[in-house]
Image (cartoon, rainbow, N blue to C red):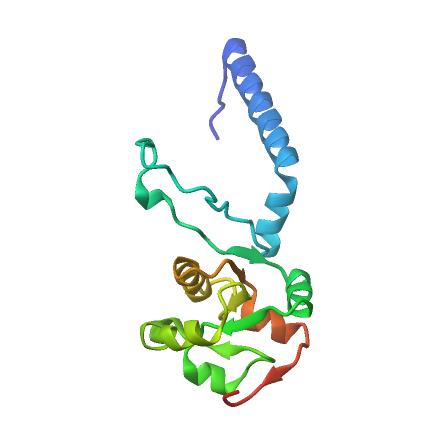
Length: 179
């Protein structure tokens, strides 16, 4: 083994750098504790929604920046929305829906949205609270469907990111077949 000899000045600089980095990490974690814990437990972190479109004279904001995103919700928030009359929308493919879906959900697969959206818009009022879901945290279909529904004028669109797996694992009611 070789001996590594550091000069006292270099030792002091390394120790000071270690202390500064440790302090910065502690402050950062303490200020963002809930977000960090949500990330480690797989819970959602809300995405801000642009609520005011730019005016015609506002050149600082491009028209592409006016995109509304559906807000994510947790299982307990979903219970509240369902009690208030929200509509569940299954963004998974039709075969998965027929095999098993959340009780009360309607099927609007992202892959078939171009063909089925007109019928959906004709039967569901735009003021209805909508909650889209798919196959859990790794599935972007519910979020993408939510963006489409917001663009179509629906005003209250949310995404249950835990989706089918979280609902099933919580022991909630599931249905088979087409409703």
